[in-house]
Length: 239
Ligand code: 6PG
Image 1 (cartoon, rainbow, N blue to C red):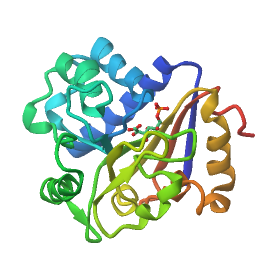
Image 2: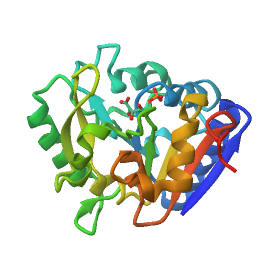
Image 3: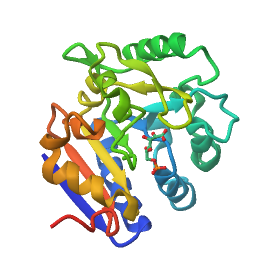
């Protein structure tokens, strides 16, 4: 299941991910991608904006998010806001192809609304919306999307999206659930830096031992297409 790619630097990682994404677009004609938040994907977005502003067919990509902080889009914590600053405003992605989670809304209502958006705009497989590419980050505590260890059972929710709570800040978040994440045709973990190394090793080498502890250990796409795009630091503890 684990397809592992290790790179010398974030440019080489971004180049490889971009090549994979462009191959997928050429095979399918167009794709849906769920973006992760946090800091790691910034390097990928900057890479696209600087090196591929024209070469990637942005009108063939529908952008969604795997999670969002419950803040307005202009807030510095907003995942959409970060993506808009680093990518969307620079490459002219059509507004009609950008499906942001509306962090300014009531969290419970927004989880339902976004879940309906996924059902409306994505193909359904086995009763759940299906993404072409699901980009995931890996939290230092083993979370992914915004499913955190202290509320790991949200992963099993029958809904497409749930309201989660950040364990330290208490900030509310909207997150996709396991049924959507594991329904994607291709799931890609993007992890760089030495602070990811332990969780990368635990999940790749001993994932079954951490199913109750790390939400990221529960990522197991039905398609069996699970890739890890890592730098040497994040991969340092792998054999
Ligand atoms: C978020 C993310 C989250 C992130 C990990 C890794 O909204 O924070 O979606 O799941 O991917 O926490 O974050 P970094 O890339 O900042 O390490």
